[in-house]
Length: 218
Length: 171
Image (cartoon, rainbow over all chains, first blue to last red; front, side, top):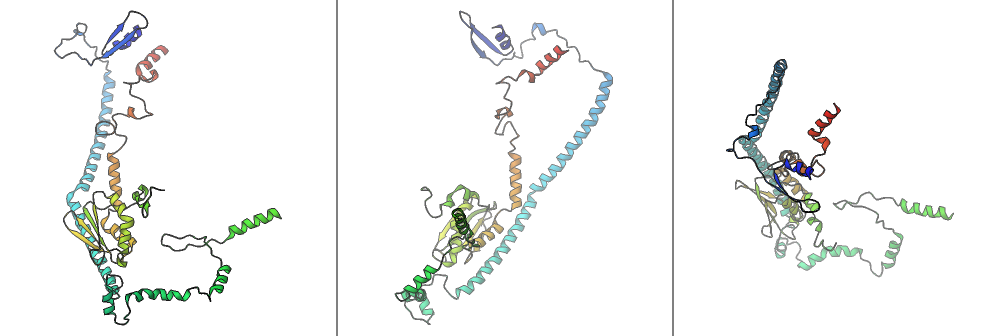
């Protein structure tokens, strides 16, 4: 109990205890407290005179000299850092420099884009002659290209007609079946994102497996 | 993956969006893409819109991006700037990669600028700073550090008072 009291007496708080029976039931209420400024000094502290800190005069002189050296060094380093960092920040923040940079960048963009647009316009002027890539109405192409006077559906069929040379008919069937049975398709390949086939692996994995099985049996 | 609906749902994944490296300059406000559906000349522009526009919007949330379809004979991009000016980029019969390279070269922040910005941001958000205007008031809030003596008393060997008492006893 006294132990608890000794700890709590050092803090600002009131200790309320119940001392009827059993272990102490403590209600500890903390109050933020400092004496008001108009209250006079406590009686025990009224005539207190401080003992001055002991000072060795020779040590003091020596320390002062050392401190002076130290402080000049630190001051000089600080001022140097302040100057250089200020100059650097000013250089970066200078709005005139930034405006100049932006203007130059703008001109560069305009020039490059103009060149790009011209290149594309040139490429387009070549393709326009074919009129395949834009939205020509079909009757317009027919009028312009008087070479073939086919109806639109037949124009659609032209690529199909070309493909029909490879069609399998009753006459070709046996030959084509033989061809398929004799051929072997290798699916063990990879493609990149442009659809180009990468180097195919040789089929050594299958052979090795067979070899292992043979050695087990044999 | 039943929730990955639609064409190329990978475009909606966070990983894919974070991969976008087109961060526009600060003076760009609006990007307009004009292209036509079913047109061979617009294929590059369409691919650009299909694959890269979501990434660009993710990295540039303040830029308004608009796509306009089947309004003009040939496809093009328009960039509208702070000063009210605009730049038209013709993308007729241009593949997606070429469009990306051109836009990155002219309208995006350079690697150097991005590095400088990252450095400046690191300086301001230094986790070693505590107090007002920073996320934490004191290092005692960080788990694993010595807790505040106001809450948990320091062990005796860390307190000068007890160290002095121990020294006096030894003496």
